[in-house]
Length: 270
Image (cartoon, rainbow, N blue to C red):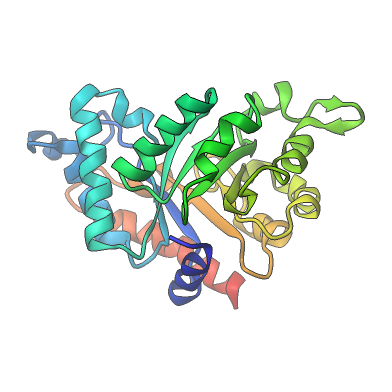
C-alpha cells in the first residue's frame, strides 16, 4: 500500500486509528477456547466489528510466536483474511526485527512477500545495512523504533551523545539511507512532549504512536504536536479496545471503544 492510499483511507474514514491484535489466550472470552483456532476466531470477530472505524491493524508477532506453529498459522490466517476481505486496511507486523544484511533480507521477504504485510517494525541499533534491505521493497514501509513508550526508553534513547539526544541522531541519520521515503517511525504517546522536536527533523513522515489508552497517552496532545499536513499519524490502541469485554458481546464492546477514539480523531481532522 502506498502512503497516498493510506492518507486517502484516513480521510475517508475520518480515522487514523490502528488496532493492535495482541492475542493472549488467557484474556480472550472463554467460549472461544472451544474453537479450532481460538486466536483467529478472536481476531476475525474483532476485525469484522471494527474495520470501518480504523485504518490499520498491528499484530505483535510475539503473541503468535509464543504459541508455536499454531500461533504462526493463526497470524497467517489473520493477515490473509485482512488482505482478501479488507484490502483497504493497512497492516503492520510488529516484529521489531533487525539483523545483518542478508538476514534482514530474509526477514523482509518473510513479512512482505510470504505473509503480505504492508509494513514491519524494525530496531535501528545495527544501523543502515540492517535496515536498507527492508526499505528496498516497493510500496512497503519500514517502521523504525525512534522513541518508545516504555520506561527503559530513557536507558539509551534520550541519552545525550556529542551534545544531541541519541533518538534525534537516529532520526537524522536514517534520512540519508537508500529509499528513506519508505520509512515511518515509532514514537510513544507517553512521549508527546518530544513530538515538536521530532517534527523538526522528520516533518513529513508518518509516525506510529502506541501508548494511547492503557498506557496513559493523550490523543489530543499527540495530535497537537505530531500531526502534519498529511495527518502523518497512526495512533495505536490494543488492550483498551480488544479486551473491552470477555463476554459473548466482546466484539461489539471492542467496536464501542474503537468508535470513541474514532470520534475524537474526526474532531482532530475537522
